[in-house]
Length: 318
Image (cartoon, rainbow, N blue to C red; front, side, top):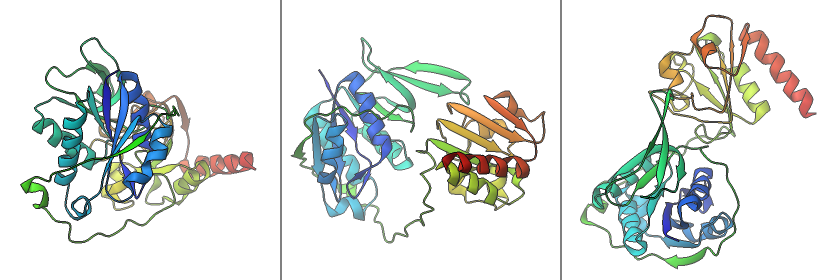
């Protein structure tokens, strides 16, 4: 069976969930070979093997931490040349998309971004994508070179499939441009204790209807172990940080459950959440466009409905 390269997104050896989802998808089209770079790369091997990686190629060098993406592209290209895979899968954050695009240019291959599913095809992997704010579903394949594909988070369930996970050192020769853009300082983001927005299984979002008061929404999110999102109107008003914006000019999410509180449902917002598996809306305007999209809708004042919902959840949790 052909091998499939999977670029590993990890923090000091702790593998992030989208990478484990990629391993599940990779097994549909070949044998996953993981590429882990930077500090703690070798520490990822056990978890990657548990989820299907037959091999784990690792490399660490100061360049990976001190400079922007080019050193990582150099390493992924070295892995590509060593393995000659049937496809290269890359996790979806902004950095991942840049790495995927740069690699595709270097190896003269086509690229597919934001796939939501992968399947084997007679002429290579076939990717499913959502288009036009999830109004349409398309199937695509690369016709030139080795497919380079990024996949949206929560597109596949994480499935264990123990494999060898043999650790192999990856030899990397850095290109002249690798040290062109240096990282001069870093400021860690303060942790809220909630899941990452794009990776969360449940997202509770709020819009103009909260009138600046996100406390009730945060309480509901915490009762569900959910991430908090916001509409563009709420972000533009300064009520919540832009990092939490869901929509065309924010982040795209595809959780198992999406709860929209006080959000009208403009097409720009729908573009970022329409692929959610189950959608619930709470809005006092019965004519709000969001109700055309939902699986369940509640017409009512969110300041009355949301606290009752939070209380009921906490009661059932005991």
